[in-house]
Length: 306
Picture 1: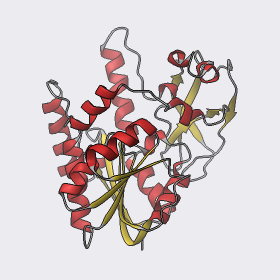
Picture 2: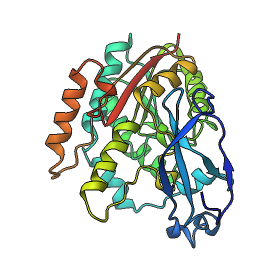
Picture 3: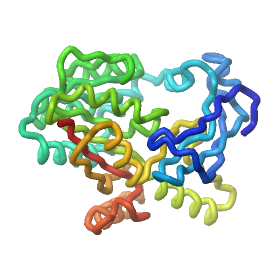
Picture 4: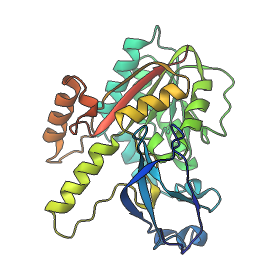
């Protein structure tokens, strides 16, 4: 780790508390785009940090975190253009993921009541959830996308994060889709999320599969001259789950009836990768233990609050 800006060491695993690690990657920082917006954040450019795997539970995390107060909130203060946000709401590249999650919740939930989507982004999932019969609400860190999501989906969207949000009523379901990998100390977030749920309510989480993503990136780097594997630059992905560590995290946060399966992929329009992505997902979903195979590039988990 270089020290052009201050870091604080992370000595224990965020999931199991273990202290035995093996290094798997070196993440670099390039935050030069923030040089005018946030010079203190931009000062981390040129730094690097080791990403290390806990040998006890298979969770992977950085060996140190930036010491800058509210580092992650400041990094995610992204000032997107209005037309880009509108395009994100209309784009269907995540619809397979969203419909798979809604199907999974429908199979588990006694009724389609109140649902909270954490990381609501531009509100497309909320729109689909309403069509499926859920009374959806959102929670979104970015104030601009939160406001757009509320207008576009017709749902209430709260501005904030899991640590600042205090709902006045419990929810029958909570979803975190491509969110938990961006959150340091994820067990704290999961414990907060559990408190949002009514008794018998369900949590649905979708994250990248850390081991499969590392394998994919390392193979790509070997096969493509000049390509550098990127799985954690700027610590955009700060928490890296395997099927084992994701189940462990949910159970340690107090969830029961935990299930982890291969998750549906993004399907970008016009991309030649759509067919191989679908094929890998379908095979990983069909195989016994497929969530632990290198074909499962993403993980879908469910857990219940009793």
